[in-house]
Length: 260
Ligand code: CO8
Image (cartoon, protein in one colour):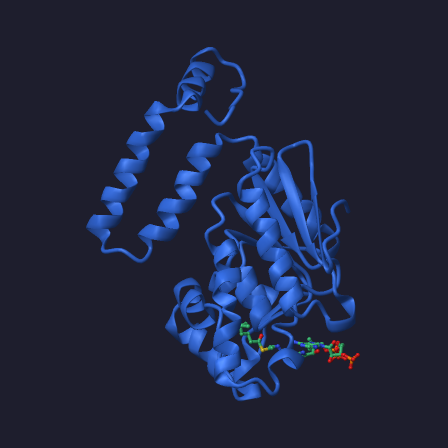
């Protein structure tokens, strides 16, 4: 892949998609500070790159991410953990305005499961295992695991995962709503890329508004969320892409969306 940055590699494709790959096989892709900084840097860069309309996030064919790097916090004090301000790095991914598709084969544990939950769509290979094992280390999730998981799978599924630390299979993740699709391991990345390519061809302002309203609205009272939706819906009538979409429909041709 082009643009290697430490253990995070990325490439931008001509179809408007980008792929970000974590590549630290010696530690099962564990998220050390260097990987987290590189991830934040890539997401920041792609947020501002008009040639990127959708991102695939992967760890490769065999494992996604085995969590935060345990070596980096085994002996850390509370003030050391506080001073690292990992939340600034996670925020770059959480606030990323374009669709993110996680392609997950193998383990997505701890910070790896939390990273997958930052995505908008999760394509899981049959080998995928999702878990929040922090409790077994005398810890708890610290990057959204107690909050995003319960919102995704509900209290009783989330509590079982969080309190026991036991990972779940791809099939269980699909059943619970923690995966969007399960495919053969050999198809995970290509399926994610095909989906990203489809999203990249859609009107980017509408796509971004849908993502923003779904995420922001989920934590608002219904009336406020519906107001937010209505305002975003109205905003789209000022885009050229909305006119292009309607015109192409009546002219029985494929629309060409320019993000304007
Ligand atoms: N951190 C550091 N090194 C790791 C990690 C990790 N999370 N996971 C694996 N490694 C290393 C191993 O130490 C080993 O190194 P070495 O070869 O030098 O001994 C190498 O990767 C290969 O690992 P294994 O031999 O254990 O490989 P297996 O295939 O037998 O097992 C597993 C793979 C099941 C993934 C196993 O390695 C494992 O259980 N890993 C730890 C999983 C875990 O507990 N993750 C949660 C970490 S805590 C966390 O994520 C908190 C998040 C908080 C938010 C972040 C805020 C900073």
